[in-house]
Length: 361
Image (cartoon, rainbow, N blue to C red; front, side, top):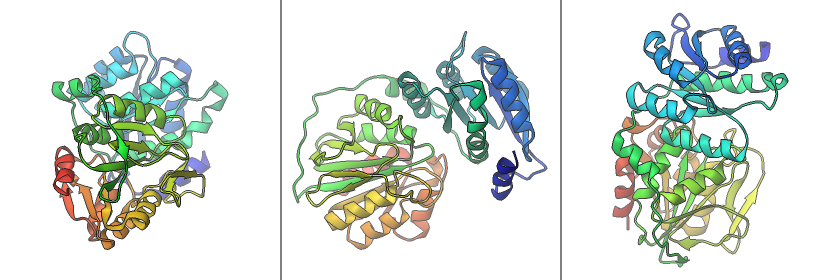
């Protein structure tokens, strides 16, 4: 507990300590509700305002307690986490952290939740004895979530992200006349990527390298989901993958993604950069060193400065850098850093990113 409290006290939040972060806990396990509430209640600046056993109860309590942050279990009776999140984000949006199992199905549902607008997630412990293992992570993510902006999902958006779009996807080998587009995102990224990538037409002469801050076990599901709703082919990157026009390769969780001497994908587990792996800077720098002015960088929502050094190299090499505008960022951190460094060639809100990209060609 001392370790948790030190982390919290070291973090600056936009809320004054006299105005605590109000938290609603939603979980079908009475043990989880009690334990999480007890631990969070001991953290300075936190106030657990209530708990709910399922989504139906949660939707009743949200207007009553007006929480700043919700922790939401994925698997619940009556109304599951995904259905509950859809309703929250449609009618009463607020920062939500999913509590998910580490199974394949759990990863798929977590990616869906992040696409719908959940700010972040923590992995549910495999046993009651391991709950302490997630508390440090949960505390930090609640602090971050309280600073995030959330946006309602419209009926149109809900339709777009649930309808699969699987045209025949044609790819061809990359040539020197083509562009290499590196897209980086962090907090709020899955939803941002689900807006930008489906809007990219299949006939742009470009290959795509995508870096989303995400741990091991979840990027495969994200790649599948993006592939299902996009005009270009999206795959989780594997060692030896070649660059193909019309294809996007997503860095696997836990691995930095770079290009080798043959312009093939190489993955490594070198130390984290900015505390993350994969890091956007690593991929951007590798691409800029290889392709210079043919490189385009896109930095989307996220906390911190990852992507700034890579964008600076792309910019100085004669390439082009696009940063997401503050107005649509869940967290205006990484794009802000790029803008303040003076290396953004264009700044655009999320719905205009793909159109801005097309104008570069």
